[in-house]
Amino acid sequence: MPDWLTLRRRFALFFAAIAIGGSVLFAGGLWLGYSHAGGPSQGYVSAWLAGSFALLGLVAWIGFLFDENVARPIKAVATDLQTRARSDVSVDIDQAPGRYLGALAPAAQAIHQALDTARKREAEILEEKTASIRRDKA
Image (cartoon, rainbow, N blue to C red; front, side):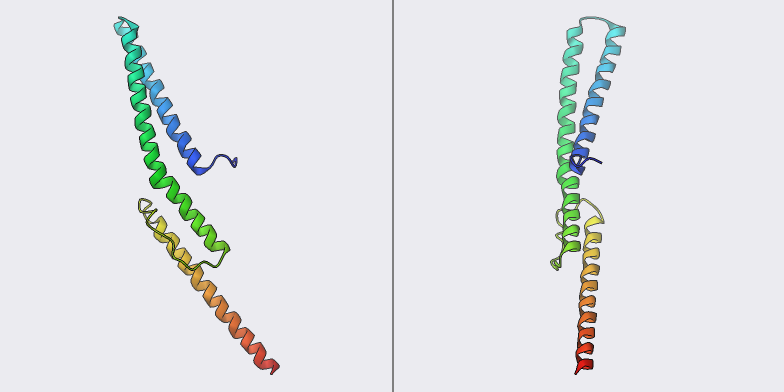
């Protein structure tokens, strides 16, 4: 997958496809009505424009809410997990941004705690082995 096609951009393209597809279907329905009923086309064009702009606005608003409550928190949790995997960070993961993600944020916190416990146990084992080697040398 190309680097420029991030998760948030894919979600934006998904919502744009919904908006454009809905507008095209709306135009098709109005064209069908015009072909059966006839009459002046200005009313149909005005109805299509008003309906399409309303649909575009609704999809943009829902897309914004989706971005704020799903896409950004997923990216934040993924970034937190990558940071903790590559460095020794013992601060807990902030679960507030992921409140709408169900079990994802608590699962990320559980992974972080297990990794932190494993790192501490590894450090203890290394310290024990080092102490054992020093005793053997003495």
